[in-house]
Amino acid sequence: MTKLHWEDFAAGNIAEYGPRQVTRDEIIAFASEFDPQPIHLDDEAARASMLGGLSASGWHTCSLAMRMIADGILHNAMSMGAPGVDEVRWIVPLRPDESITLRATVLDTRVSRSRPDMGFVKFRFDLINQGGTTIMTMTSSIMLGRRTAGAAA
Amino acid sequence: MTKLHWEDFAAGNIAEYGPRQVTRDEIIAFASEFDPQPIHLDDEAARASMLGGLSASGWHTCSLAMRMIADGILHNAMSMGAPGVDEVRWIVPLRPDESITLRATVLDTRVSRSRPDMGFVKFRFDLINQGGTTIMTMTSSIMLGRRTAGAAA
Image (tube, rainbow over all chains, first blue to last red; front, side):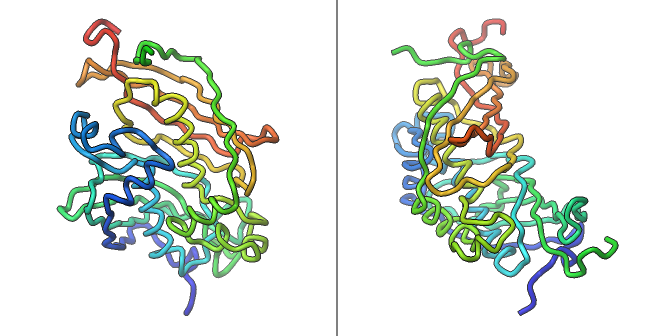
């Protein structure tokens, strides 16, 4: 199976991954380890909060998106990592037993100046729940090996 | 114990939290669940990669920073969540058995326009390893309840 290289992505490409269901136990396990705030751990405290009920840590939501990116895109690509994240917006809470889909839109691609054997693909990721509501957006670049390293972009 | 409110934070405040050690087992467990790329799971593949050895998923590094923010700041504050993240830069990989410290710098504070009972505190977080190298930077705002809700900022 041919692996995806930098050249295989172009601005405007859109793909969807998932769905993936998220359980109440997963939400509480992640929060217990990384974000032990009552709104992510305790029903009563969560109901009394701005969010009106138990919801996943925003970092859990990001990590679930990462898993969908790893399985859907990177697993079959010449991935060379990522320099960071440009922006994350937590718009609507992720609730127990919701089912999420990831929409990946390529915003831009460019060759690395310092390493001509790789390029950057800038994505906008939209995480969408089973009701069609976008619950999180994330903008981030991924580094990918080039098929024709050193050739003009 | 009095909880910290929005008024208790001011631009220029700096605090440090940690240290926190990260084990190889934790790195592999997180990656197995959320970021199953060989560079985060397999020594041999990691040695052959750009990163030259096993390292934590960037999202694991973010989640560890979140735990330090939760324990160090939010646990004793009128936290009302966060709208997202403005920027994350993964500068240097986080390696097994490293010990990390979080430095939190307040960049800016402002009252919410739509909810005068709360305000935003914008932080720059620097995650620093035991050698004094900054391995990740993150800029993010946290929403906090105001002590004197509705009063002039």
